[in-house]
Amino acid sequence: MTAIAAVNLVPLATAGTVFSGTTVTPVVYSPVGFIQPGVAKWADRAGGIPLLYPSFTVSVKLPSNGSKVCRIVAKLSLPTPDVTAPSTSTGIQPAPSKAYECLAQLEMVLPERSTTAERNALRGLLLSALSEWVQASDGDPNSLTGSPLPAAIANFEIPY
Image 1 (cartoon, rainbow, N blue to C red):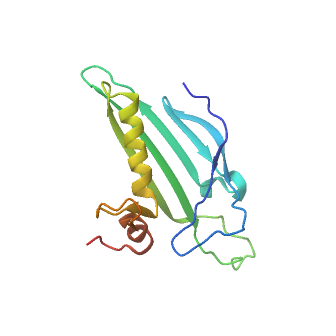
Image 2 (tube, rainbow, N blue to C red; image 1 turned 135 degrees about the horizontal axis):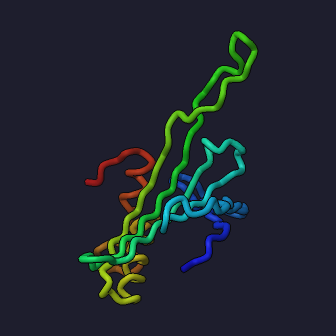
């Protein structure tokens, strides 16, 4: 079992952004605890409003009766506050509310018979697919092409 400690998530360059000579500050997600058995949660509490804390959860469901797979689910949530008037006619500031939430969920289904090398290979391929650039299929090891995921995420662009 892994201890639940603070997690630093480093925002990487987004489409069209280049970090040259600048320092990227990690976002500290502090442990919230176990919100359910087997589900750990962390939150970025810098904003000060619990309803609007960005959060990160990880759950691991081990193989059980009849199941031969381990399921690992990671979720990352980025809530956006609703725009409210600075005060109402009574002069009272309205309570903060959430307008919407961007959510990423990754589920890995790993057979209990899989080897550590196979699980690490899957993780490596996943990281490659999530990156900005992937190796082109033209046989040249130095030839890169854009991954379809950044454009799909940034602009809802459909791969073709």
